[in-house]
Amino acid sequence: GLFFSIGELWRTTRRFTVSSMRNLGMGKKIIEGRIFEELHFLIEMIKSYKGEPFSLTSFNCAPINITFVMLFGDRFDYKDPTFLTLLRLIDEVMILLGSPYLNYFNFYPFLGFLFKTHKIMLGKIEDVRVILRQYMRASREDINENSVRSYIDALIFKQQEEKNKKDSLFHDDNLMASILDLVMAGTETIATTLQWAILLMMKYPEIQKKVQEEIGRTVKAGSWATYEDRKNMPFTNAVLHEVQRFITLLPHVPRCTAVDTHFRGYFLPKGIIVIPSLTSVLLDKTQWETPHQFNPNHFLDAQGNFVKREAFLPFSTGRRNCIGESLAKMELFVFFVGLLQTFTFQPQPGVSESDLDLTVPQTTFTLRPQPQATCAVLRE
Image (cartoon, rainbow, N blue to C red; front, side, top):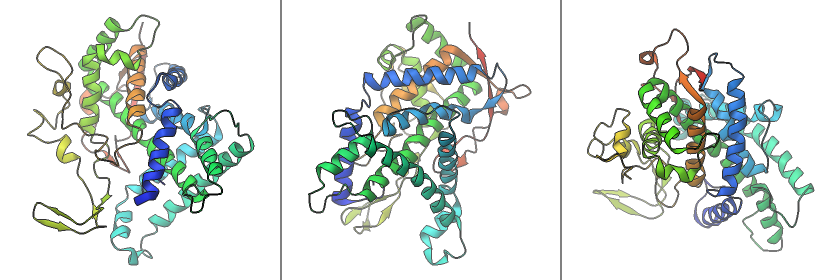
């Protein structure tokens, strides 16, 4: 797979995955068209609520579907039973990954008989694998030698290409692990970031209004904002960067030392687990004027121009940084701008902006917002 492999297996799999995703349109205009298509379905779903409260988790459907487009070659209807099953299983696995009992098991595996969390989680992951195997079989039966429609297709072609190669790394186990990794990580992160973005607009309506005003000045009526438009939308761009900085979505992803290392007087032997803290950068008071406040001005200069910040590292850094960074950035911008172009998001009746909870996120695989509802008021 991609996330738990090391050495040549990791290098080969990652290199192939990045190349395949780019060929499928990651970060390019071709996938932007699919994002616009998904935005349409998301907006129609939100319109169906007719201004009534609905859960922030409803926003998950669209970014998750873009991941499935890349993996499977097509989107799911939001009411498709397989889609709903995958969403449920992914959600349950992500919650279990944040369980303190799982951390206890990782440190004290001999106490596994006391902690059943890891067994429950592995069972749910196997349920996801069962569904993915069905798509693998369908792709093998319907493969088109002249067209790579999905990441699964690309993996199958590569496996066939190396079928006579001794010790090929593209065996069935690695194929399944790679797809599973992308299903899990590629769905949770952008979906949760979009939830936070809408919640923060509800919390700070003056910022939401300012974003909508910039959209009105920049985007032609009847059109969607393209990712290229971000260059002419400094405030909106700053807001989205500040969302990612403020929420510290995935602050503690474990790494492993590749060689014996000396760091600040400490000796770290090869193979030891290291947990970098992105929080120490994203909330560093020496780098940010108001690190614990949501403040888009962190990314604006005195003239209102967008400013890149060296301490902005939401996708981590180094050779194992996020594979889908370019796709995630495009999705977040297009979905966020399209939603605010169409709706104004408000707390449900009886809830004020001050009641909205930002302080204690849910500790899952990512830091999710607490379960909350929103009302989407259609803009004229």
